[in-house]
Length: 410
Image (tube, rainbow, N blue to C red; front, side):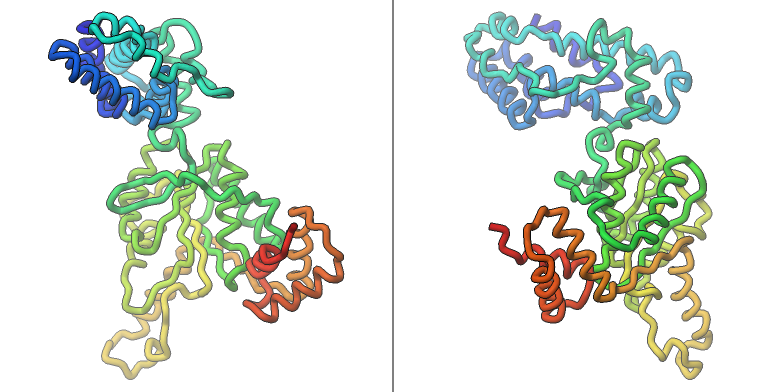
């Protein structure tokens, strides 16, 4: 069984990347070490068990998670093209791999230990039980996996693959690529009080986008603390079941936007690229790459990606009075000014968030107090909220939240 199992693992083709997984690599090392002596085999076994516990998965669950999240030529074509778009050779290769993976899923680990000459008690250290509530991949619930390629293709089409199979909140790093956000903000649209017109505009544009209709990049502009960023983050919790993902990009990584959009084209998921607090000094030129991604490049705009940005400045690039002067070292100063102003124009939709007046500020405070089930005299709440606002940052949704956070709930 030892040699047969190792040969089976070596036979993976499309899912060959799974051999790099720490648990699978340790299992493979154990199979190799069984002929070299008990100490090496025992060490490899312990490494295998350690890797499973570190992953947080049971043995069988781990294989399911690897299959669900693998990004390979088969899963990519399955997601984008469906079963009808796969070549017969690709289907046969997938059947071969699923047959191997099924045998690994059903592997008798205690039997492996017996054949290796190690104490079978070691098999009891492996986490076998699936955690409560864990749902197996639907097409792999029963039967022979080799017969379920079509169902697996459908699964990838509905749920995507790779990092998108398990995370819809992501961060773009120009060096490391897409990175998961382990604990995305749970903020809901219902938690945002006020600015109803602005919310409806953003939601309407987003819903058009998710229906595959033409939609605009959006610039959310206005006073600090008015909920611009919160509104974008809350979209993920409203629409994630409609194949929406949110990718946060820092200003430092804007130069990598063309590479990001090229990557996003390879998925069937809809992406909102979120750029917070967008603005540039007059000497910075990273905005030129942003302009090209939105409009102006020879390449067609990615149909499954939009840019939603927030800013406290309507004109995103700092402009001085010298820019408007014709007495300048630059002969065509007006051209430079027009280039700077054109960035904001690339956003098809600009939505303004003015600072709330006193009444609106108090409505936000009262709404947040209700959502937190705060038991407090309404008049006292309003009076203290106004005192807090005057002593801190002026009326805004952020000020209201900070005021409520300062209260003693005991």
